[in-house]
Length: 183
Picture 1 (cartoon, rainbow, N blue to C red):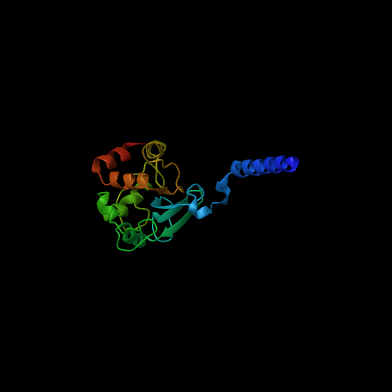
Picture 2 (cartoon, rainbow, N blue to C red; picture 1 turned 90 degrees about the horizontal axis):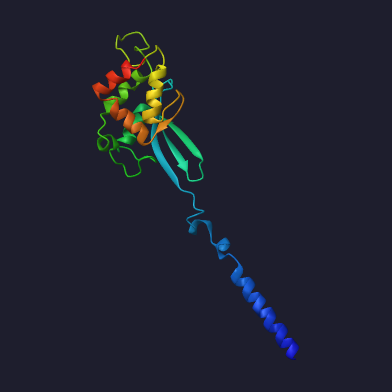
């Protein structure tokens, strides 16, 4: 009888120890655990790669907390409508006028082709671009874009604050002259 009690107490103690030694977090549902919950952040962006709709590619990128990325291309008009808050967007769910907030004139997007071309690439315009080479920025201009905006290759999708800063800066005639002078 004494022996049975001792065995029972020892077994009870072992069960209690094993029960408390377990990590209870493994039983928490994923959606209730912020460490396991996947979040998605959206950003507007651009690329200097041409498309069938223009000289600049527009889009938004969704980046999951897991590192997975999903890029959605937009027309210039869709981009401007979403960025200005006229149309709801995953990159602008509050429908803020980001152009106004960032002090960017929508016409500035019309001039972004000048970053890549030395002159307008089609017949019908004598307008000059800012690029150091006919169809691409010079090496010095690429260095400048990389250093100031983390933009280093033509097919890169530039997004977030780096993109907004580049567009805003490109509005300034002094910036345009500085960029043009880099050969």
